[in-house]
Image 1: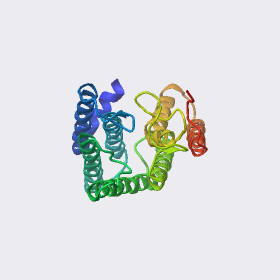
Image 2 (image 1 turned 135 degrees about the vertical axis):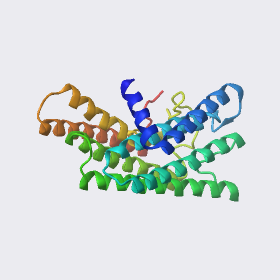
Image 3 (image 1 turned 120 degrees about the vertical axis):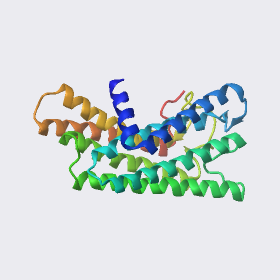
Length: 266
């Protein structure tokens, strides 16, 4: 909890626009949670508010992460403001589209059933593409710049961004096939809340773990710097090994999904 408070206070002070986007996502998550209990409408077999709930939580976590990590880069105030505004407004419009489509009772993703729905889906693709470019920028600068963290944590941040970019590519795979399931149509039996298919391959598994690498790997490296009093080289090796195992897990879930196999077969 101390770390969470530190991150929140840092983002509020150094990246206020991202902090308020996090708050907006929190409100949308709360609204979606209320919607689950008062709105019985379903879409592809689940309550229409499950998806905006998941996206609001995930987007809030990612926005908070960017707001904190950007303070570690030796950027000028102008460059930080530009990046913060791009990330803030693109992700805000993204979650608004998802929320509004849920309110209408229609799909936000893979929906080209009308000109309006197709336009919103295309807009979402553009907004995410913009954020992927920001991820690439962070990855490049994690190599060429000295961050305000121990070397092992900087390596973890770099590897985290690289895996996030792969996770975003998996999202592109879903767009290319206009579905997240492999072997069956979207919908059907799934893991509670996450709704990952339990009867067929589901690319959302690899997509999920890929996108959250930027939290998991740096947190591992940070934990290790506090708990393991050893030379920097050993911590870097351990960080790289952990990231490699994590990447291998994502690769496994991606392969599994492409073969039409569910993560958990119920």
